[in-house]
Length: 212
Image (cartoon, rainbow, N blue to C red; front, side, top):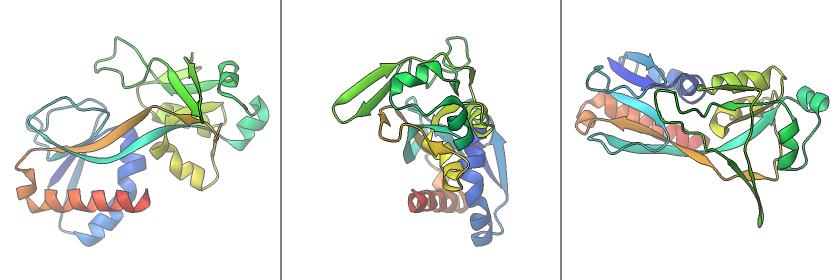
């Protein structure tokens, strides 16, 4: 049994797409997903590894970086026709937007920057948003964008599948959002002595490198 801790949004967008290929290659490995946005302890919860977002505090666990994801602004073509197409970052201040919640009263420290940095060449604009809809889980702003309610500010890795099939398009594509988040695997130092853990780590790392 391979027990993996993973946040809700990353389970659907970054992990589940690779599970069929893993099961085909290793059909004898059974998998249990412990789906939570809280950084639970692996040993206490009898888990083998975790997928984590953002910088990790120093610990006795090994961290292996999978990739660093930038943020993207996305919307449906219909929403951009309805609300208008912004031509500069400050245009966003008058448009309905959804993003991740930044609050001091959530259990874990917020990963959301207090201001967002937009860069194009030598130009830089700093903006703070009052989101129409905000949540601690990125599934909420992703759903907001997919339903045509406005613009979602999300990690690139979460929006890429919907962009590739044409459900969403990138807003202000000529501007780069300077902020980013690291996605990594966390596991016990002796965990790779277990063959099922070792093959999963190598498999997922190789698959993610191949699609990015």
